[in-house]
View 1: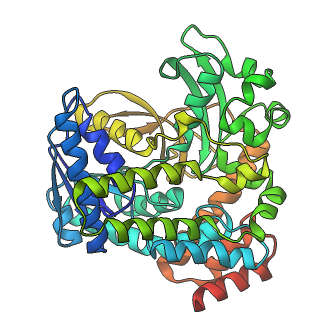
View 2 (view 1 turned 90 degrees about the horizontal axis):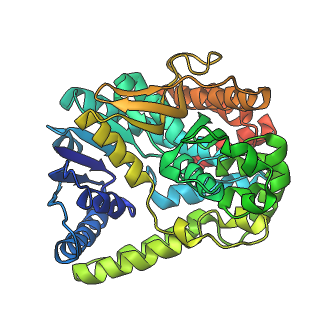
Length: 445
């Protein structure tokens, strides 16, 4: 089976490659990398070469996966079976602007949430639509697994072209389920759960052991257990108990907007600025060196990246450090591989994915993309029914879906009114006047 990775020079590509090498089914025989930056993709290919060598000479059996660098998008797509889309339109410089421009206007600046997420979506959707059109033309039977942020908005746009053959993924929900299960004393691989929302806006609303025991109720009533894992530390036991559910970590920006904004507004270095320097330094140092050196540099940089993830939110809630088990860097890669295995091998899997709603949330259109528990097999991913949403959950979902749809409309048709609507209707942007200033500055940067 052939896999194409768009954004093949991305820093996290080696995690996907590692998962493929460790795949006991050895499902993928060839990986094609495509990136608009030749230097970055050459560095990543060098890291992959060393990683494959380590797996061949280490303990256990490793899959043999050929790595090829494509010359063009069309070259990358022809004849492929799966496409992993992990692009960053505008690079880290674009992310810096997405974060700084809103902060200068006095509202939250974050890559995927709030004004920053809208700006990123406006820039990314036209490119994602072009990719979807080329997939439809050159590889109509291929499945697209979308990593590209803002994942909900981008998957929404690509589904207009590809329908159900595009599936969005995120590692936050699966990480939440696993952490909550461990905190409740259960095996994460033997629990069932109810999770629903949009990308970076969802709630774990039930967690049940294999014998039918309700684990979530017990966890929410145990402050000590709640504060042993990331979401418990972020939101606090009192608020989680009041909510009666455990939110995705990104809801911290909504529930604790004032505290998070205070930790960011006068920051000397945003997350985008940190990653721009860190990754820029990595690619500079790793260019032209041996695969062994490039791999060592990548591993060291990756660990630092994981240690500093959501640092401002953690600073706003006491400055705690991430647990060792959350620094491994896996997540996206494992979810993507599970999707690919289930579809290609017709192996039933239950995963939290971004897919078309169908009838899962009756208040949303059937074609609207939501993030929820799905059954996956050779037919693709189908969302499962869920319990009715509470008013506060549904209200946030409806408002954010309106923002996503307006963002897609604005990007696709270059519609200024739709862009203003997307920006001003976001609950983290508190004024149409501020929204207009943000859009104006972004257009002239």
